[in-house]
Image (spheres, rainbow, N blue to C red):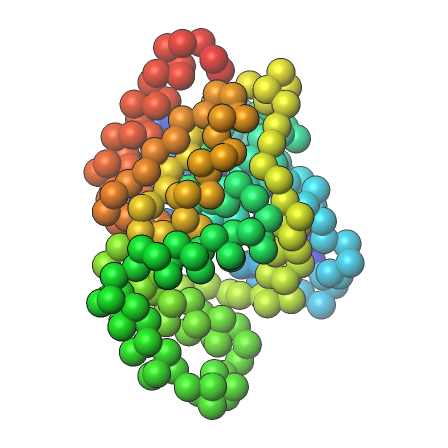
Length: 282
């Protein structure tokens, strides 16, 4: 799918409830279980920072509205009328912003490991949570990873490869299993650092909120207790201010509960959709 200097790929897998998983058509299919594809028709869709970009792409023209408009075009392209929209990390914030702008197109919104606040607050909370709650073995694993990844090695890499290498080295902050190597998840994923910087700037002053009279789709938030990048504690003060939200902390997960505890993730998601549909809130 071509959009103003970018080619956004999508893949459709499974059968059942129409669902858009936004972020990458390469990375994210690797993180959701085969069993989930028995209940959901999953369309995995690229966003611009993980897409093929050509010379006509102009950074100045990329806004949060650009991203949500891309998602709407993707929904129409794959032929889904009304969807469950799913996003992981900041793609979850993007999923929510899409649901706010296109409420008639969204039946349910799912945020996985997503922050409810601005970047600075998220980073500070992550650092504090790491310092207080990470085990000594986990901290040692992080030190070992970075000892093997010298500044000279990083400087010799293309910036996109260095981005992935640093993400993998930070694995003890992202994964319940602090020895997990995420390299295979990134294989073949195009990374555009210039657009990543633009995307991150969307959340520099971010505050999670919505008008419940306009966006009636229920929201499910799933986070991992061992996510030291977006700690679950960030949600404590935010949740009482929000309506129609279900919040779940997975005890044996880090930043990607859908991959780390797939059976629990599938069960929580299906039960939540069943309850909210039965209550007539969508």
